[in-house]
Amino acid sequence: MDRRTVSFVVDTKEEHNKLYIRYPGRILLCDQSFVLDTYSGKAVEGTQQIIHELRSSATEVPCVHPLNWPTSVANLPCNCISCYNNPLNNQCKYIEWQHPREVQLQIKCLHPKEAEQWVGDEVVHNIEKKEVNANAVEFLQAENKWKIGLDGGKNMMIRYDQFCRGKK
Image (cartoon, rainbow, N blue to C red; front, side, top):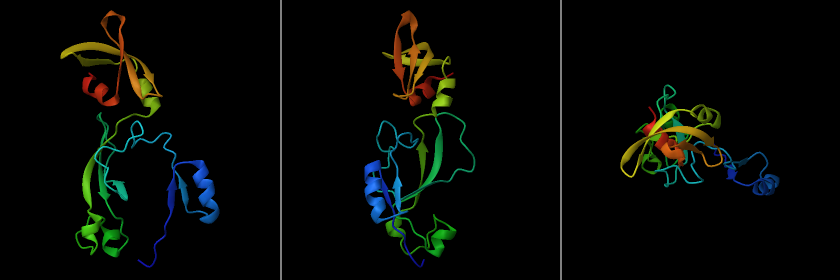
């Protein structure tokens, strides 16, 4: 490694414009308006630690819901020749700070177009410890939830993970 380049990530356009004057080409705007790795503005479950490197190690796209992606994470990115050839190597002299590991990342939502295709599907949902059959009536994109129709004309909202558990 012969150099390091430092860039900045900001989450508002105002911050981007302010820093761009001083650091042109090194500011990344990430407003999280539609990001699959966040859910309701919260951090990805199990990633409250500082993670500077996250990459998929999948060899094929998962197609069974809920979607689980194998990922490689590390607390410190490294560009030494050992890490460049194999990011999960044990030869790097910075290994104790890197803490590389494999984790399963579960997607907590679908792209809105795919979520719309689930409308009309049957789902079994537990209500007061009883299994109840229902149908997906509508997908509400702003809430990232499905409205399901229950017997008696009642409706309720369920999340992606609940839908996956009850989908037939």
